[in-house]
Image (cartoon, rainbow, N blue to C red; front, side, top):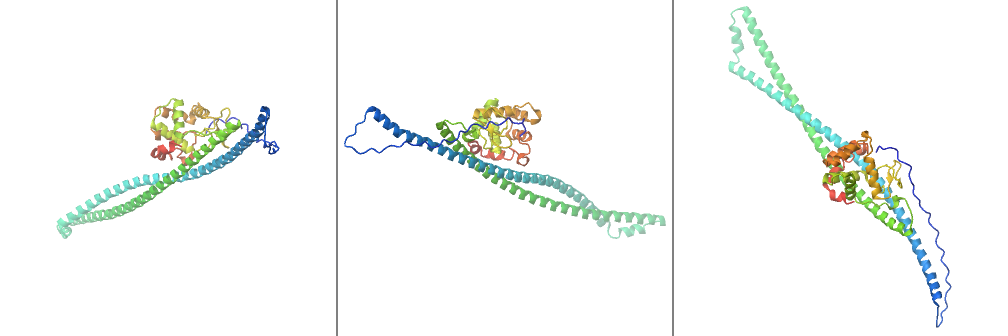
Amino acid sequence: MLEPPPGPADKGWVPTQPRSVVLRAIQPIRRVRRLTLTGAGLLLLLSLIAEPAGARDLEGARGRLASVERQIERQQAAIGQQHERLDAMAGDLARTQAALQETQAQLGASQQRLADATARYEASSDLLQGVTRTAYQQGPLAPVEALLAATSLTDLVDRYQYLNSIQVANAEVADGVADEAAELSAATRELDTLASRQIAQSIQLQAHNAALRVALLEQQRQLAQLNAQRRKAAQLVQRLSLRVDPAITGAGTTFGNWASLLLSELGAPQCRDNLTVLVAWQVAEGTAAAHNPLATTHYMPGSTSFNSVGVRNFSSVDVGLQATMETLRLPVPSYGYRAILGNLANCAPAKTTAMTINASSWCRGCAGGLYVLNVLPLVQADFATFSSR
């Protein structure tokens, strides 16, 4: 998406892992028949026992945090690979849809050509039938009788030329009927070919849509797992009193809840069309960036870099919402964000808003030119599943 260049990334502060605490050696106590300890001695013994247990607990927490961080890294990489597959599938879908639309346009033109050819053939056929009917009524000897009835040589020549012109005209009518019949046959074959192509492309489009839905749901599952691991990491970080990159602990809210929060912050109605298009927008992005489901590159204090494009990790849902709002409200008419806000404010049909998102600079040309539009029908058909991620 086009935006002013992001600010420098605050890479956060990640403390180094401390070495294991050296456990104090406890000298074995010989068995005695009677052991008496003073209050101070009891406290000393308890402290010697408790301290190693606490150290082991902290060290275990650090080990679990390191393990969770590795899992998060693997899940982020898997989501990135899935996103690449989704981009390729979106390209295939876009090409198939474009081919189908072209076929449908050709089919419409072919149907018109067939209708025109049918009309011309019927007109020529009617004319030929009229000629045939007249010839039948006059009889086969009518031309001869017309010539014999001539009163002079000049009259005979005129009658001959007239009869000849009628024969030529009749032949032209007959040839015209044959030509129109051939054109009608060609138009019919063309229409049949295009209709078959349309059926095949429609089936292919349905297959692409089905495959895209499966891949998107798999991405949803991966994102849910990532959020679960981030929540574990957040608990461990809080226990260890550490500060880390929000990419590790930034477990977001569901797509449906985030859409509702953004609409509330924007002062836009919480209508079904608005919620649907915002969920579809998040699905189209499918990013693992922390608290940044629309993948804005807008810099905020405390944010860190998610990828080389400049998408940010944010420290909280509130910060992510603020960054998204500030992006959409950038005073640059060429970005096209004002139209998005206007459609949300007026609760425009989801497809209308999706078209303005697609036409904006947010991710122009993405998904083969069908950014958000390609996933919107899938989200509309299964809103509960996609909104609950």
